[in-house]
Length: 385
Image (cartoon, rainbow, N blue to C red):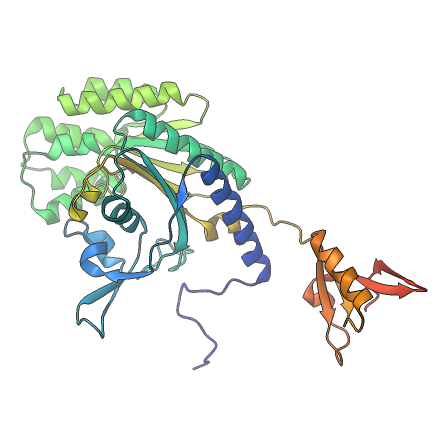
């Protein structure tokens, strides 16, 4: 076996893509900072019981686990950063008011999310804690749209849904966990035959409502249709009212609605959203409200946020032209050292020609060279075959 081969769906980032990702990372984190979101850097590795909850079997299946040689306890390599940020908010910062946090780092998945996906997404996200009102959801959806615009991938649509509708239909039914998960899978796939079979034997109002959900997607008219065909439960009325208000407040954005989109419903508690762009069939960003996630850290707080994968953004966004570097002779005197320093202070990339090496400088990104003409150092086009 070749020792240079990597595991399936794991890949290196070569200079051009790495530079693209780093530029995106800086651009987005700077925008988050301008909006008051403070950067945190959680560890890649934690105790499994801190990262994983018993109710989220899907996240547990996506998480690599190993035994800690020091404590003997099970450790987990994070598959999602949000539980860690929630721990930081609840246990370490413990602020009384609104807290805005952001992050960027690798996560690891046991399996890729799709055929072309990576098992090591570079996850970047922003989360807002401490405000239960829709203003917080408005802020994070707006910030997500701006983040995609800064990546030159303005959203073609942002699907909104509400986990509260599904919960209102299933609360009180005491469904077995396996049936609960199967209903979720069928709704995600909009598999109506499977949904019809799975709901056999459920009370009629709930069964009818679950069977309607896959049909409830499209423009704002979906909300009126949902109000007419779903059971008149208070939780459903509140959820539809929340979505209508967001649709009004965010009318400048390309919003649509999908009331069967429940991805991560074990995790979320209210409004959920997914952002798409024209040249990607998969969602570029996911987010929503998760008010109860901090409870296992001793402090449940209202919370909403989003995350996206910088690797996916870099693959879809237009390549940024490399500015080109200047090849400079190895400095033998203070005059040349000063000139190289002046160029670098001006923002130029200067590559030193180490003694004994010739040719191949274009591979290093050089397109110009620093040469001495009489008593002056000047920049000329690189002369190299």
